[in-house]
Amino acid sequence: MKAKEICEYVEELAAPFAAEVGCDIWDVQFVKEAGQWYLRVKIDHPEGVTIDMCEHVSRALDAPLDEADPIPYSYMLEVSSPGIERVLRKDKHFEKYAGHPVEVRLYKAREGLEKNFVATLKEKKDDTLYLEKDGKDIEIPMENVALCRLHVEFTF
Image 1: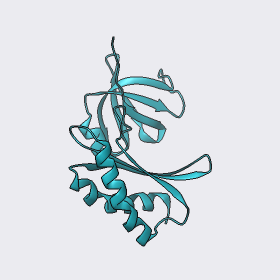
Image 2: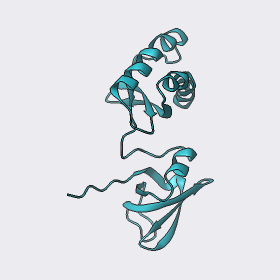
Image 3: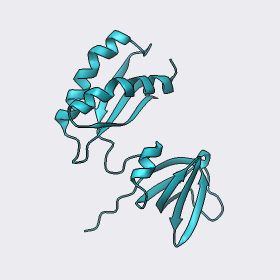
Image 4: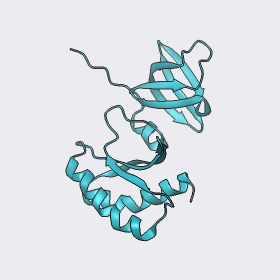
């Protein structure tokens, strides 16, 4: 299985376990970092994710993953919250957070935009990200977007 297929399989497998504790699957990633493979399952709950929720999903996934054995390498399973500055990847993420500030990282700077900037998310439609920055509308093809995540400013 390819990484994308593994993620889709694990998301389908994990969804009922997450639902048992009132959570949804936010995202699943299968990545290699510093020579180690990680299977990351991000769960979300409207009132926040607890350690107990993460533990429940992690323990519930152990046996089915061992039995199905969809991953041909050794890996670390991590179950966690997507966090306050969560990465937006799926259409449902962009829909949920329309109107919110986002941090956008481009693969390279373009037409009056720096490589990294903060803007207001308007929508993602088809393969284009629609933003508003400094009173101006911006359209960016998703192929140029390296990262889009919620932006939170802390004031003291």
